[in-house]
Length: 297
Image (cartoon, rainbow, N blue to C red):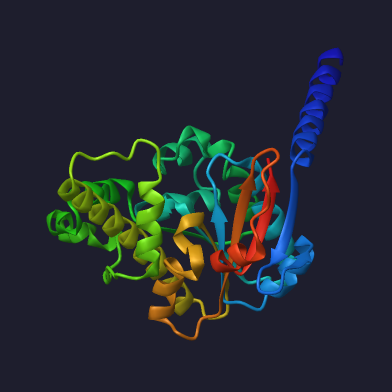
């Protein structure tokens, strides 16, 4: 009896500690076109009208992952026919992901076979577990990291080496464009610490390879979502990807629109602020997304 009380008290303490940690985060939600401050329930109500919601992600930030889970919980109360698309799962993991969601494999086996990082349990696990409990389909929408890494190194010419039977793992059609997203992406990469290449030719080639991999990643996610929607016309999709993939309502958004111009798509972008850091102007937020979640870390 004594041991049971001790274990029970420990569980309660952990829940309280976890809840207190979450409450340490202060966040605000804005509709960027008019600067209107919103509650998460109001955000859900507005987004329920869209076919696809792209929700920006920052790996390792538990505030964002908590908000994603809270959003999905409230969204399912409004829209019962919903699927979750996630960049952390690549296409070759769809089978084991489906098996786990159906309860056919244990979690540790799933984590190993899905090639998930050790941070999964602290990052996306709560969202996946909620989807599992509510029988929400989860789309493994990404291209495999091994393929993307090789494109970053060798460029798109690497894809010629991929065996025919493995080419379903990335988008059948992709278009590398010279547009505003490309300029933004190059500027973002050049600002990263340690980005210092020997000469201009090396820099240009490396940047082009990185952008080609970024394009392939976005094309693959867009194709995965589009294919799912064609098979399931009455289901809406919430897509979770690294925030940069939809900056400026470009990237994945453009590639989805090219496949289906009639899709209604909304972009939700988290903005993380350090202590005493000022909020971006509404003009800046408007250029980035349809809705912004300001999180004070």
